[in-house]
Length: 111
Length: 115
Image (cartoon, rainbow over all chains, first blue to last red; front, top):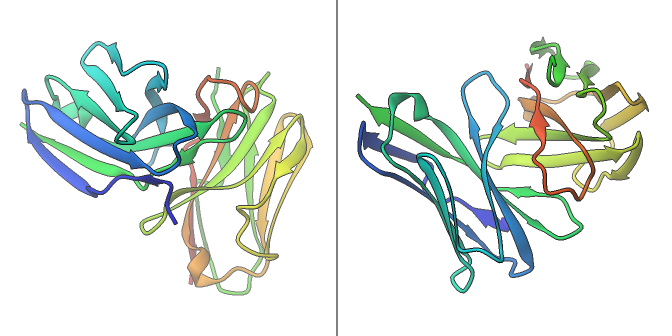
């Protein structure tokens, strides 16, 4: 049973528009969340994180929102660029334990 | 810094053969993780080490899989005998601390194909 779900396997967005990637989790004890980005033939690289004491964290074009009551987080990319085309993994962790990764969402930003 | 180094990058083998994947973590990192990525299950944690000691191997699929970390700069993941369902991309990652809030740094992965 997956504790971290990314229900959209893929997403296509026009360049300049907003990309919204969603992630749902089942374990209410998760207290720290990460987004990773992965290009083909490369390992995942860290993108942005958020602690459960916050509901928003922003870093340039990337913003992560956390809704604890809904056990839902989302990654917003504004404006989207062709170089953002990649697979995005959501990961969640309970204090003292390792991260659990979602299956990933493939984002395609169309020029 | 060279980052996490994995070898080989690609491995094609026949069912029943032994496969050994190698990883060199980032110097100074004391935690090392082995992951497997498949289309169906995404990224799965197989095993992780802290200070060269295996801490949790509950993700290892079965006895055909084994991992070692003889020193702080080297780890192997071995599959013996290999089966077609083992075909996947295997990632090694390292970090400072196990429960730290810093991210893990991933290697480029080894794409394994078992025929």
